[in-house]
Amino acid sequence: MQESLYTRHINGLNSLQTLNSLGKNKTNAYGYDLDGNEYENDTKSFYRRKRLRHKLKRILKELKFAKKNLKNYQSLTFREKEVIRLLAKGYNNPEIAIQLFISRSTVEQHRKNINRKLNIKSFMDLMHYVYAYNLV
Image (tube, rainbow, N blue to C red):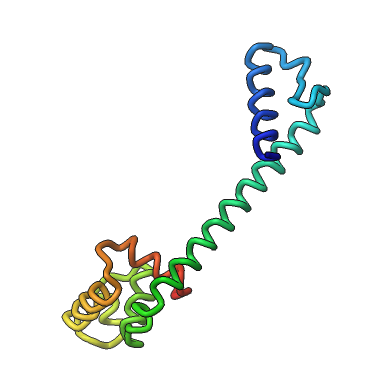
């Protein structure tokens, strides 16, 4: 309810400003005039709340994902988790092989096992696991 009031308030101000090229006679949904400072503070707090709400939704989504996929994550070996960490940092297969002192084909095999165990099809799916289980 309160969010819709703020949205109408901001949209109302924008439409009034476009009608009046000088930007005078600014009013809001509550019927009182606003000077420039009150309007700026109100819009800043609106966008701050919007960012906070978005962040909380993302955290809740990550927690649900982590709970749902815990068994898949627990099936990974320590070395496979190391490979995932290096992938998340932007390393490619030859660089991972150098970092872990293993062959490139072993890294490729680890990646195949990771994809199979986690049922992932793309790099973005892998990144969901990285963020949900704090592998970076």
